[in-house]
Length: 294
Image (cartoon, rainbow, N blue to C red; front, side):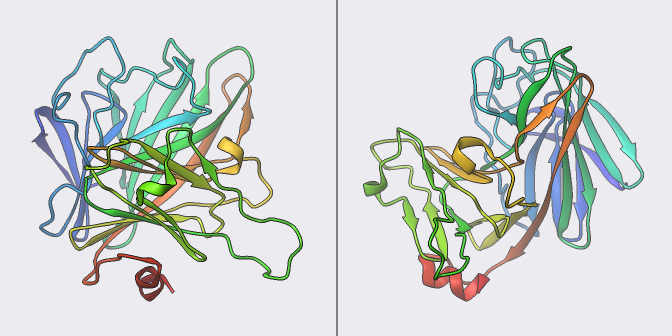
């Protein structure tokens, strides 16, 4: 794979990889984590926390920003594994593989593989392997921390309008206030508008996204993550395959795999396809989203 070594936000020995006009910056001193995403001449589509930028070796968990691999359900300390040291980096064909051995808190090994996948897109393969001698139930959880000021777009399940049973399962976290205007649930799309001025700082929503994608528009650039949704599978957080978390400095767009029971040395993979494009029209409401996505 064609890549070059760069310094980024204070971290040395980062790798820059490209697919057409879309490029990613990958950390090697922490992680596994993807720190930056750029389309054409854009600013970083991801958010990096200024207080932890360039840091390594800390003894506590840091949310540096960028893109990370977690596992659900969210529990402390199991989910908050410390990723403040070097990762193993290797090339596999035309891909770059970031690998971190099992941690002492959860015994789960993490791997992120980055593959240029046609022009202006990447395939991101997330792998979790259980090194505990007992079974562990978990789901892969791919979390991307986006720069402030944008809007997340998520397609709502549709289905047969004459059906007698419910087909949409929406999860709201206890700190979420639907009256603050950030979350707008529509008939075809749910939009989450980032607003750093909201007094109550946090909001989070998730649901069973059968169309299997989530997007984020900011400063004229649309970033889209596609994945695979399994209709009959059991998903975390009361059935969520997609989630969006919003707070003061940033907004997260997240996808999840179903739950799996992993025995010793067993693993699961969760794949996302990332695409970036320039979009002239700003998405302000559901009608705008319909014009772009149909």
